[in-house]
Image (cartoon, protein in one colour):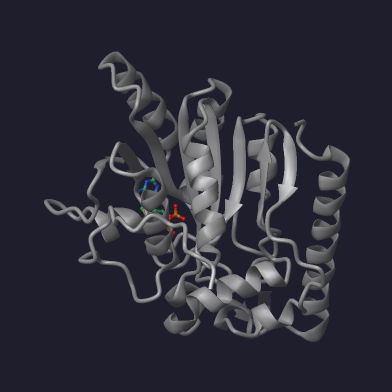
Length: 301
Ligand SMILES: Cc1ncc(C[n+]2csc(CCOP(=O)(O)OP(=O)(O)O)c2C)c(N)n1
């Protein structure tokens, strides 16, 4: 068996308030393993405020700032300036926000942070809805998914709009580094975090974060579901360094997307035609990714 390269030290206590099988909890745990103790995390209103820092407790062994939901990008710019003023150049500043607080409510602050070239990591954990307030749809909720604000019934078929391409928005700002990560592939996850840690300038991590109560699946299946997301092409793993895209988890033949959808209550209403529509979109996006990788070519030696 290959030797595990993930650091053994834990910077997150086990006594937190996450649901069983919580993808965002795994995301934070792995992120901090790669970043280590010289880290300060800014967390906006989201599940993680409740999971990690219900006053006066904390589940994290690093400094945490709770900020307003729209402010993560601005907050980490301020933290970076403060750390630099104090001569703490070795401290990694990280924003850790949900998809609602990133793709929708905090998008302006994220754009500002990227454009200012803030020397910080912005990590978005994507559980594909506003989960903390009761499973409302976000810009990152996929097409067709049930949520409490995109119901399923005679006149409604789940979310009628497509998922927002957050990586596309981020890449348009030309960050130093941007990557997609999944706790189901911990070594790929850790390598990307450690690579990001060693760079300077604006960096963005898009982390796949399954939510058992919100997506309606068995909490023992979080890791398996994440693997399916990547193997079906729903959540490809790739990174963009110095503007060059590289797929980090090659999939020679994509599995049918129905393998992934069938495991989740939020997609149970979909007809074979609707599933075929999702499949076609996933395959188009995958082909585009392959074409971009070919076009970018290998990194210069
Ligand atoms: C300006 C503002 N609007 C709404 C809220 C209420 N609120 C608190 S947490 C939350 C959900 C955030 O969703 P997301 O960022 O996706 O993170 P998740 O809850 O899924 O972890 C909302 C809407 C708020 N705190 N501030």
